[in-house]
Length: 182
Image (cartoon, rainbow, N blue to C red; front, top):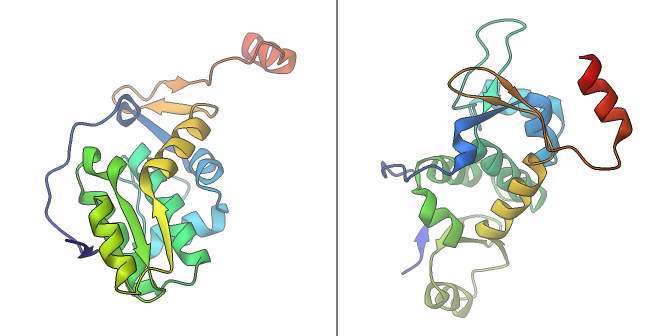
């Protein structure tokens, strides 16, 4: 049965390899398609806060996990569609606590007021039959978009703080020179 998205105390699933990496603000913004101003505001208001490292004071660097960036991108899509902030807050909290395996199979549907989580084609059909679903977000598809975007951006190892450069593009001579010099 479909469920209205609300916070749950669900255990976290096994993290993908990306969960051992963290992403600073500019990389999180680029992958989520938001501005740094939005990122900062959402972190300060508690809408989407970095789970790896919050800013330790003025000038500190926040560090976002893969899941955080996924939630950022979904929040952006929901805001763009005009979903109420109250529903978006509940959705963001539910996405942060859902098991990773569940996330990749989830579809979020909204009628503009509420957001519903559908985990099967039957739940999706039931929601649409009821006339509630106006638009949907396939979380698995957003997951793929975020994964592809982050693969091209700088990251930081969560355990050591070591910077990880994206794979080198064969035709990117300028990047090769920067890496040799820096």
